[in-house]
Amino acid sequence: MTTLAEPPIWSLLTLPSLEALLSRDGSMPAAITFAHALDEVSVAEAPLLALTRLMIERAQALGGLTLTATGALSRADVRAFFDEMVWPGYDKANVLVMNKVLNEADVMPVEITRRIAQDVKLLRKREKRLLASKAGTMLIREDQAGALFRQLFVTTFWEVNLAYFDRVPLEAWPQNHIGIVLWCLSVAGHEWFKPEDLIRTCTVWDGTLDEGPIDFAGFALESRVLRPLTWFGLMETRLEGDDDLPVWRRARQYRKSELFDRALRFEVQLNKTSGVSH
Picture 1 (tube, helix red, strand yellow):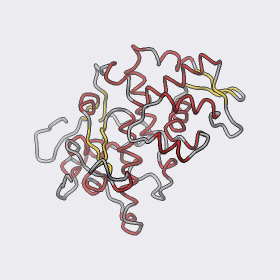
Picture 2 (cartoon, helix red, strand yellow):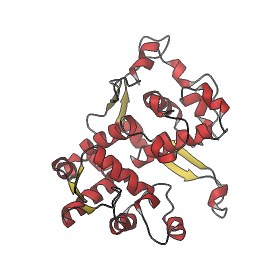
Picture 3 (cartoon, helix red, strand yellow):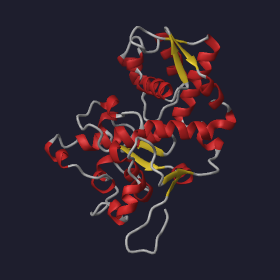
Picture 4 (tube, rainbow, N blue to C red):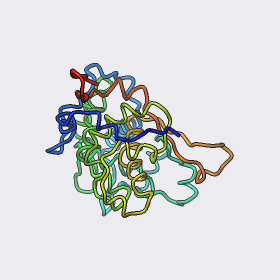
């Protein structure tokens, strides 16, 4: 376990830097930028990008993806994506044991990717089909991997309500200050840690969290920040403990990947310094 002492890491920042990491209009704060030379090869195979490309390519090949009456993908399309996708921390074998057929709601990565791709307007709905848009067709090109990464990243963390997928009754926490959380992880995420290790040091604590179940905050941090970062290849994940133990007895750990520091830049200043950019 990585043990970090109080106070929270963000207390190292000046007040203007903290404010600069917060979004006021639903867009990524100006204090967070992407590397100018974002390596197309490094980001191209990030799980969310890879599955997005699969969806767009299948939509192109079949003249669209079939939608159900509720707007979800058909079982045939879901199964095709399920078979090809690679998704961190996702037990495909267990999903097949639990489900005789695969609906979109049974395959979280497919549902999330489809919703995000529609939000970014890479896929567009026409009657009962989901078609590849002009933007989607352009952004799946190999030389556009960096642009696709940027667009999906901003949409996922600042436009999509990730609370929708976990149903934890904490509203937007900690996604409502995701810029601060990301900077804290850039400082504290080098070694393997469990979500509960960094709850107090990498988030702005909300007093209402003390009134709910003890594990709500850790689960929200994991489902709304740590796990989504693995979709972009920015976090690595593993199960703690002996491989012979059942999965439910092994805690999941995370640490930032090398890509994290190569991809993201933070323009912030530390307290009591002449001005250090991280």
